[in-house]
Length: 88
Image (cartoon, rainbow, N blue to C red; front, side, top):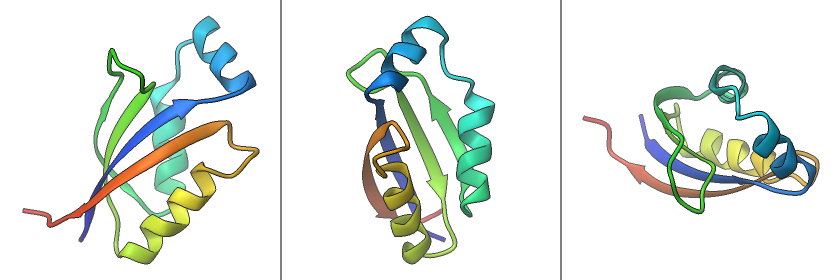
């Protein structure tokens, strides 16, 4: 199955909420899992990104669906996908 790295930044009112209450990684994980991804690793980096997820998906079409949903205007997330990388 393909592996992707997602670099996400919270935008708009979400970014203020994040500053006041750090993200609940379980909530993010549940959202990704509901869309068909398996979380391999999840990080809160000290960088311009708020969260980095390494996910495995059944196929590239699922990854495209996840990227579109995360970048939807009402999601409050700006994400960049890197991959696919072959799983080992």
